[in-house]
Length: 190
Image 1 (cartoon, helix red, strand yellow):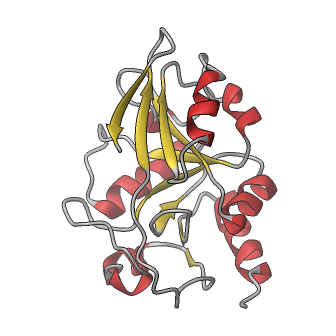
Image 2: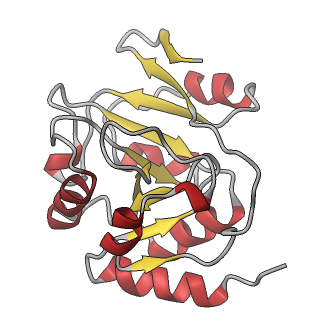
């Protein structure tokens, strides 16, 4: 199996300099950057030709870190997410500590706790959340394998992770749920 030590070091260097990475996640391949860096977030919007009012998600390695980035981290949602095998993104109200252009106009932010080993190690080593948005141009479907990623995306990032490029297992996007202020959940994408 490919050792990703070199990928990890290269990603960390790029992220620390405000650059963009193309990397495998526990769902589809993603374009990522430092979720606290407004410039880097802007560069993702430009690369994808995406309107900046469309939200992107952030990835965290550990549940305990959620309270650093939202004002209302209801622990009940963790029990719900643990009961689902599919990676699940939760939309929280009251985002904080993130790039302003990453936070939805209504103040919410979408967060997924990753289970993928590479992503977890990357996020823990970086010490901050990483943006994850599907590696496609706006309006086009998310690529399910690395070879389906548009050349414009590959040419527009500062580093492409080598790990899992040959993985032909078709990936699917995460489920999405919204945590309401009263603690109830709305399922947005099962």
